[in-house]
Image (cartoon, rainbow, N blue to C red; front, top):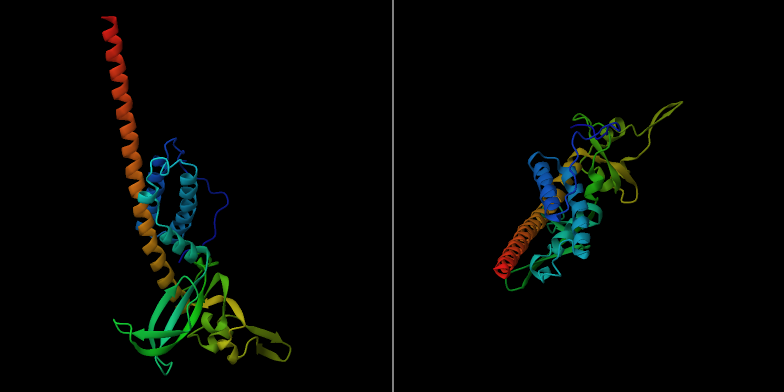
Length: 274
């Protein structure tokens, strides 16, 4: 995986000028997002999506996208729930509820929530009859924007450093204590020898936190958060495509009305001369 370090001297080869018609801007941004989607520029896409959402909100407020003026707000306004979910995933808080069997020895299901859920799962049939209650573990998920890895990532290294802390219990889940101490360099180099900075019991700590996630944990989170973000992104992108189509049709209609009016004025003027 490539490094996330940026070259401060980088300059773009081409500048895309902001057009006076907002519909052109919408088309340009959607085009960039399509490019990032097709070429797996995931974090760039998600960051631009969140910037674009704020851009669109303000454009609607200022009637640059004249949905209120044309009584199209209810019909064409971007899906608020999809936007709320993307905002929660990107820079808010989500929770993963892991449903266990009655012995807490086997995972039955994983569910993502946008508000903190209960710590128990009630299994019901189609009629609502309670079939059983299962214990759950509720895990506070990192923000997606903080999942951008820091520094070089080696496939041989056990951990990946992110930009937000997690309790050791979840961050190092599945990792070997000896591997964490050695490869993570959690060692005091004392005069009488090497002493671990952590104890084996710390591996289950909910109080102690770390920025370094076990690789399997990192990959697991990145299997979940992007899945739900992208699901809502495609709803938002579809909304914006409809707005783009409507704005083009609206401008074309205004242009046709203008030409029709100008033609009629010319005919009237010529008739008066006769």
